[in-house]
Length: 503
Image (cartoon, rainbow, N blue to C red):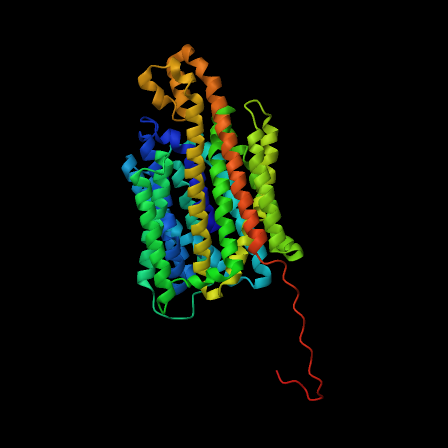
């Protein structure tokens, strides 16, 4: 299951390294900034919109079968992405990759929940989460190595052998499981979930692109999506065969765990958004070096994720998750103290602490969700956590990314007066745009470099503090509503009779 997940998570982190090469008209396919954004967003839109649907279908028709179908789709779409001849082909191929990924992600966790007994499940989920952390970290390094030796399509082609090996291993090692209840499907509920999630995610993506929530392209699909999701909840409460019984949200353990996952990924993804710019533009590291500098985060995930189940057994999920969220908030707030000339070892230490804390949030929260639902609903539970994770992360990037951009533009306005008036707006959109304008000006543009770096650092500090505040809200939610350590079961007294017990 970890190996199956590796290609899905690895691909997203690799692509970020390759964007610059893909935009090159000679070395790549000459994609514009907007086309590059949609190469990322088309995947996210389809992936987040269909996670829930594939979770339902996996429970109904077989999780192993759905996993294998998803891996085949993902592999074929990766092949199409690698050999795309223009940006439009790449965008559609990436959307097809999202389709395959949406089938794979919930199936992996659902199979783990059904294969392992409750006393082993927490550790298994911890190892699964550690695999996710590993893929996040090795993606940029793998992408950098591939781009140094091969063409841009190699970052997608690398998925194909991983998919083949995973498919073979799944065929021989993974047992089939499904919901034994053959109740009829809920096509109306499934359709409403797809439309609602796509509307919400599309609105979030457009908000991140435009840096505004007042544009009709942002709030119109977003509000429409929320309205459809409200209709989904109304329908699920009344149908005899719901795709997802929304009454599960009345269980504090379930709803609190889902909320904590969304909040932590909102804060983390929103803050992680600026770290690549900090390392590559402000500090001047190459993409390969920047990828290597994320390894402490991955190392902490690998070390502590498998240990999280033991921590929960000893101290209880409430204490472990609350403490970890407070530590994550402290780590995110620590980024606000970084400066242009801060030693890179400070950054490495913060990354390790953040990774260790994250390793003790995701596994307990995921286990809380999965243990709140019947085993036959494992696919739906897995899809729910992954959907909230995707939506929370997308919201974090859109909202905190917009905050960073707005702060940067305001702080750079005075320094851009050295440029012709018709170039100032474009040059002030981002630190990347400012550095490009400075490079085009030659020696005269050198005066823009120091102010650009400082303006970016100011925006990064504010964004980090906002992310830390959201993580603290998550800690408060968990401390208030997540159940504490469960008392050990007291064995029932044996009846006092002299007759032998009949078992």
